[in-house]
Image (tube, rainbow, N blue to C red; front, side):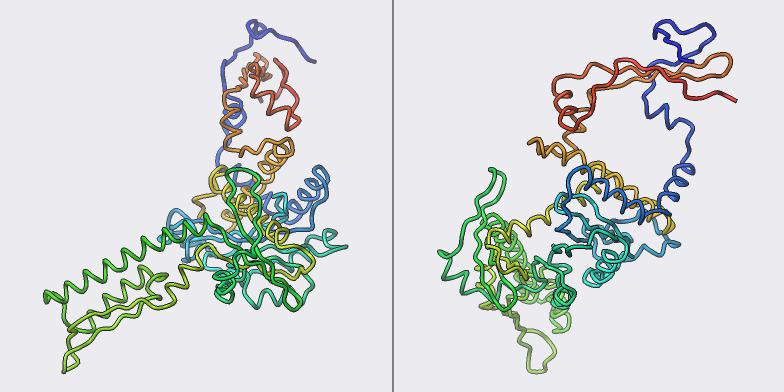
Length: 458
């Protein structure tokens, strides 16, 4: 039976605590083992949960499952994780190659909603994952692909010639940037025919200007792209690396001239280390080391810039999109490929807002549960951002969370002598900026005060 107690007037025999944060009240007394148990139970139903949640998202926000974006990222472990078979050494995308890694593959649609995720060992080769991902699309996501196969969007880390051929053989439309540097095949187009490129009009000041040109080939199209901002950034990075590369060679030359180093093997060893530090620049230079008549000691070091360095300068900011769509324009193909930003945004949110990194678990099962809960949380996060974007609000979740952090809700916990526990929940008055956000995502205004019996002490 409900009783309407005034907050300042608890019933006789009731002891209370004021100002308790809601989450502290809910989680008080719940240890990590209970949380791990919940994560294990969720992981057992991973495929069904992902399938049903995606169907629910599309039911609520419209059916839009014709474009799927697939990409991989990795994150690192804290500790040695000797009993975790997922933890392997690999190339870290967070520059943490000193730690063991685990790989997360994610498929999202063009609105950013996760279709499903898959977890691999930390040394997993990216191109090798495509076939297993397509198998999951066809076997586990029953009903999504009954009428038409989705267009697959992938970046150059996965889009090898073999994988592109596999997509074609299995009837998948695709829009990709090939893994190899395909822009080299069209250097004359970039050098001499730039006036034939079409400008993609940016939607706002933050977007970069891009110029595109479509070339139709047998059964496919290539879109030559040039980004001025990307080109300037690449050129600046190249210039800095080239400066440091030449400075290191000059220091080595002076060491040889002063007699600090002589043996040709040692000189070539030092050159090899310099090349390892600047691989993108070193391949554009030819280095020669003349030796004495006994072919034992180096007597000089010469380096010569290759013609390919000028080619590299011409192609900064250039890339080529490949697709088996032929009827679409260059701008339409470019816009379709740029939906890849959805999966990049997902990885950014997972690692920053949702606490995916680092992984502290020492078993593979716990690691999988940790990553899966992060994907579930991202489904909620993306739903919020999607609704805001539909109302013209393009703010990210991190900004929204900061805005709403000043609207607080307090829980007062009261316990009667007979052991019954009650929660009084009191919401602060939302400011105008809070109300605007709640309205955009269809959240009803909280009741000023609510009263609930939540438990009986045994």
